[in-house]
Amino acid sequence: MKPTTHQVLAERNHPPYDDRMAPNILIRSVPGDVHQTLTRRASDAGQSLQEYLLEMLREVTSRPTMQEIVSWPEREGPGSRSLGATTQEIVEEIRAQRQR
Image (cartoon, rainbow, N blue to C red; front, side, top):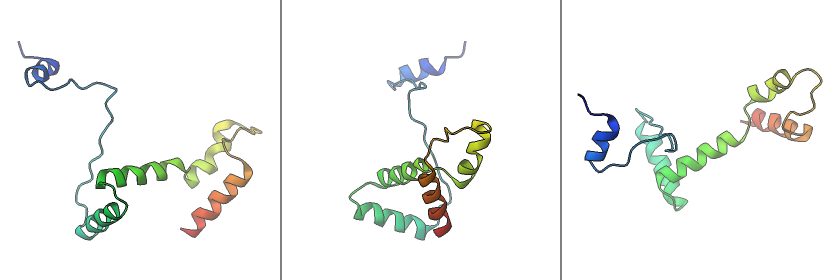
């Protein structure tokens, strides 16, 4: 009988994987100049490249995309006022998106 993954990991003295483990992201074929710039910026910020990129991902995902802003009324239903953001926040986000 073939051993389970859990048994194989136990034999290797490796903790078993479970749903509580954070997922990983792998990006292949990063251009050298992009990698160099990110590495320099991370160093300038006193962070590892992983810490720097995770902070960037958190920042990007903390703001709704334009598509998310536009689709809020559709998701919440007609006449809904619970958009998850104030009118001022929506206006500011639209202006920020236009400047990019």
